[in-house]
Image (cartoon, rainbow, N blue to C red; front, side, top):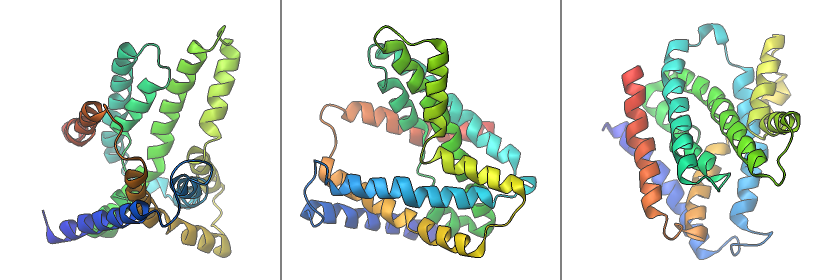
Length: 257
């Protein structure tokens, strides 16, 4: 491990630790209810700061210069992992419509923003960050779209009386597109296709809002641990999902790459 990588990781843990301390001291209020501080900050990040970053990133992506083979070497095993875990969990929990998709996204969806951006920028510089921004742009769009489709299909299958195929498809498409992460990515791609540059003022606003994503999300990780802790009786399942994400998935990506 290089000194740069060590310091980047240390900074990430310190920021999350500060969030844990703030949550532990209850400086922002008590957990639970409509005024739950962690939930309020999470919604702020999810509905404002992250969409600003995703829209600005995808609107500025140069598709002609993208390393598509590198991108495919990452996303092929990630989607494979998501689907494999989903099918396995669906056999284990046939009566729980949301659990298989949630666990599959847990085993495959990475912290490409709050952890990935500072690490890649510090270790690989601008050239590595250009590739990583591409991954970030497609990451949520690809994985959340697949996961949302799986969840909606499960919910439709378990709903009372069942829903018609047309209604199921319409609900799936609506909930997949009208999403605070997916929709800004699609809008960013649409803006890019127009060939128009972002207006200077809009670009400044989006950049300013997007710059809050990394520190806010790191603090939220710590706050969530302080407020909610680890679910009882789920340590074994969590360790299994963590092993899939941290060991099996990187090995798959390395082999395909």
